[in-house]
Amino acid sequence: MLQIQRINKNDDFKSISREDFIDFLFTHLDQFGDPKEDINKCLNYAFSNEKSEGGFALAAFYEEKLVGALIMNKTGMSGYIPDWILVYVAVDATHRGKGFGKQIIEEVYKQCDGDIKLHVEYDNPAKRLYERMGFESKYAEMRYKKK
Image (tube, rainbow, N blue to C red; front, side):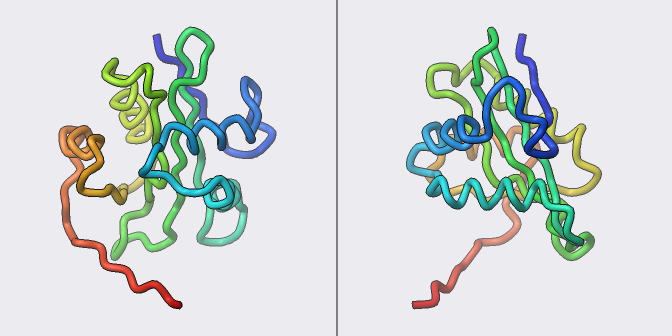
C-alpha cells in the first residue's frame, strides 16, 4: 500500500532528507525536469510564509522506499488564475504503471482548497494520466526568453 506524507516545512522531512527529495525529483523527472537548483527554489517557495506564497510537498513511499514526489505552489491569484500549480510530480521509473501517480494526484485533490493547474509538455506520456484525472487543456503556453 502506498503511504503518502505531506511536507509543509523543512522540519517535516523525516523519512528522507530534503536533498534526497530533490535528487529523486531531478532523477525521475527525466528529460521533463529542471536543474536541482530550480527544484530547490520551488521548495523554498512552497515552504515560504510570505504573503501570496506557500504550498507543500508530498512524498510517496512503497515498502518504505520513496517511489513518488510532488511539489505544489500557491499562485496567490485566485479567480483569474487557478489557486494552485502542480509544479513537479514524478514516480520512480521502476514503479510506473502501478497507479502510484494517480494516487498521488488524488491526494493533491484532497489537500488543495481550490483549482489546480499544471504545465505538461505535449510529448510527456504523463499527459494522458492528467487528462484521465480531469485536467483539460485551456491555453497554449507561450514564453519569451529575455536574452
